[in-house]
Length: 225
Image (tube, rainbow, N blue to C red; front, side, top):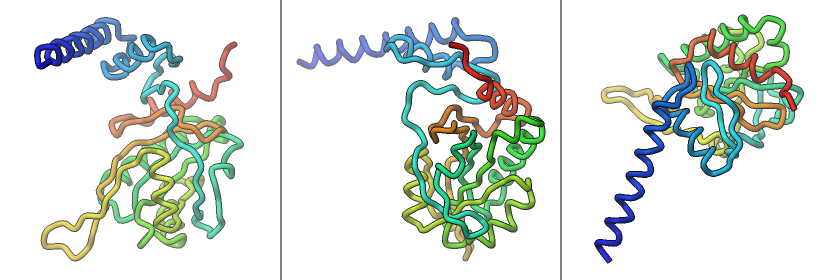
């Protein structure tokens, strides 16, 4: 039995190594090894996956994104259907964030500027993971520093957890040593969702505004049948 398990394990390792080799040598221009690996797996399993585009990670048919019920910076109750007329560019963070959150919101704001007239089809959204401190009033002040189009969303702790689960967002409260103020440890990704509320593309922290705008514009183009 032990010999059989070892044989199965070795076979799986060799198969995965083969996929990584195919991904490495078969990458499209500008495509990372990880994206190429995922594309190869999707192709092997028969899953449809769009060709990669500049900036961001294209997704196979993965159920990412979905319903949420929150409150915007004006105190209005909103859901994902509120923004169903177009695309949404979503980031999860908190207003007391010292570095990564303002950086990513700045990238989003710059990408919106680069989109020009196409920006009218995209709603940039900042969803707090710290509803204890991020009231609608606090969000209104915060988002106004980046872009007048940026929407700030908060809610009850359960509403925030539900929204985070839909996007597979990690977050946790942490208190640094010798500090009386807590911070929020969290994943840092920007999500582009379509009119159906599902994620079309994910942008990593190192994605620049030019690449982000180019990828968004590519998603806005009508798909050829």
